[in-house]
Image (cartoon, rainbow, N blue to C red):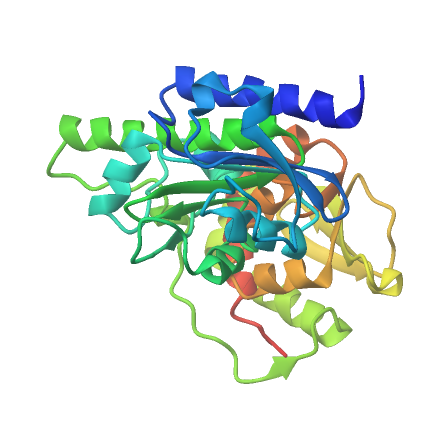
Length: 330
C-alpha cells in the first residue's frame, strides 16, 4: 500500500472516531497529515468527518491556496506545517470544551493526569467563524500541543492522530470534571494548585540562558525555598537529573538531589534522568510559559529515563519549575 492511500485511510478512521465520540458534528472540523516535506493531505470543504471517503481528501502543497474544494482553514494547517515538525493536525469543535471556555478563561486542574498531559491550555480569540489569524494559534502551539479557539473549537498537533485525539479527549473530560465539581460544591473554589503556587518576584540580574551563573542562581533559589525543601524531603527526593539544550551539548548540567536538597551541580550528561530539547523550548520553560512535565508528555522535550519514576517527585519538581522564572534570562 502506498503512503498516500495509507494516510487517507488514517484520516477516514480518525474522522469517524471524532464523530462517534461527539467531538465534532455535522460538517464541522478538518484534518490533515503530512505526506513529506511541504506536501500534505487535507479534508475538503463541506465534508462530514464521520463519513469521509477518499475523494474527500485533497493532496496539496502547503504553498498552494487556489485548489478547488480547499477548506477555509487551510492557511492554519499550512502555517502549522511551516512552523513545526508535526505530522498530523486535528481541528474540531468539542461541545463541552466550547461551552466551558465560553464562560471561563482558564481550566483549573482536578487530577494529576490533567496537569501532566494538558498543563495550562492556551486560549486564542478569533473574531470570525474561520481562523483568520492563524499566527496567534501558532504562537500558542509553541507552548502547548493543544489550543482552544474561543467560541470555535480546538487545534491539536502531533506526530500521530491517536496522540492528538487523546489530548482532545483528555481536555473534554477535564472540563466535564470541573463542571461537575462546581455543581457538587458551588461555594468552594478548586484548591488543587494552591500549595504549588508562589508569589514570584524576579531578581534584578539577567543571565544568559544555560550559563553556569544562570544555573547556580536557580540552585541557590531552590535550596532557600522552604516549601520546596519540605515537599522534597517528605518524598525523599534523592536522584540525579540532567537538563541540556540540543544545540549546545557542552551545556549539560547534572543536578544532584539528596534528601530534598541540591548538593552539587556537575557538567555531565550521564544520569538516571536526562531531559533535552531545543533552546526555544527551554526558553519558554525558564520564562514560566511551559510546564516541563507537559513539554515531555507532548514530545517538545525528550526524556531519557522513565517518566513514571520521575513523576513520583511531581510536587516538589513543579514547585521548582515555578521558581525558575524568578531568575531572569536574556
